[in-house]
Amino acid sequence: MLRIAALTMVRNDDFYLRKWVEYYGKELGKENLWIYFDGTDQVIATFCEGTNAFLHEKIGAHVVEHDRGRLRFLSERANHLLANGYDIVIGTDADEFIVVDPELGLSLPEFLEKQNIGTSISALGLDFGQKLGEEGDIREDKPFLSQRKYAQIGTRYTKPSIIAKPCTWGSGFHRIKGHNFHIAKDLYLMHFGYFDMKRIEDRFSDKDRLSQGWEKHMKKRSRTIRYATELPARNFERWTKFARICQTMVRPPYAWNKPAMFELKIVVRIPERFETIV
Image (cartoon, rainbow, N blue to C red; front, side):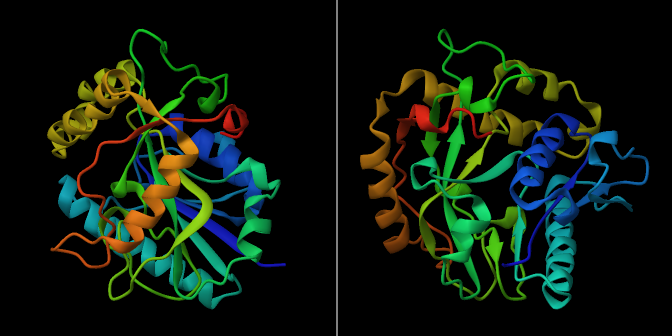
């Protein structure tokens, strides 16, 4: 059986981290989770008990500087894990969940056992919004996917998050320096960072984030809610199949190792079979 680790870095983000620990702990075992808190002023939450959780000196003061430093650090940690007994390392932000299509009836480790991974594989990115007027404020006591049904197929979240050889991630896990990416069939990266209008508004009042230059970034990402609300919801099976083919073949002119999809804005409705997973 493969040894698989998952790692992340967080700051003031217990809402998502709790779900991250719950999900990846169930899939991989909490002893295989590696969590780094950005700043020694943070407090390791009690729900992290059983994981490998560490306080780390704060990385960078601005969003761009911070993200580059964060990914350099996490790449080093991932490479260390691969050199010390792990076969695969999954790197994600705390609001990202790599999910196998439940139609296969496989756990995440069972799915990865069947993959022929060179350096990395990517899951198809789904960026969840909130359909205003239909979906209410998010509740922590219910699965996310029982409350949110609409996602944009986003090239931004088709990330090479799953690695089997030492490498260096670019900012945000969006690419691996010097390597192409390979999108696995029936595997999805579900991003929930901007799926609730109330939470976005609350983030605007977070002085710590605003001081790091996050305001413009958060306003930009809230457009996912506008897309989920205003655009027609398309067929999941048809358009995810199209997206995998398109993102495999098309590249932006400035980055051959990132996916592109002609700037298409495609919103799909998530099938009911997913609703209890995350």
